[in-house]
Image (cartoon, rainbow, N blue to C red; front, side):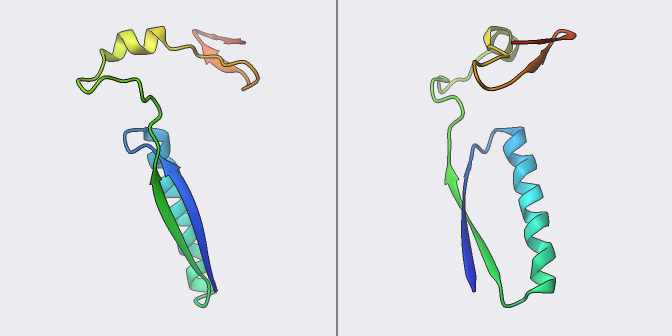
Length: 84
């Protein structure tokens, strides 16, 4: 039995990397228990911020201008308080 998982990931995103490592760990466990089951991840590109110019942006200015709260997406921690 083979299961394919499609994963959208931005290679520069640290959270995407953490998710990749967690997926690899999760996929390694069942392999020992069920050698007949194969899970094949297919990695697809995803650009988190397609408006970034090729030369990049100043990180501090970019982070300062980026909203920390998006409507209907939940709460984010900002400067010591929960906002949204």
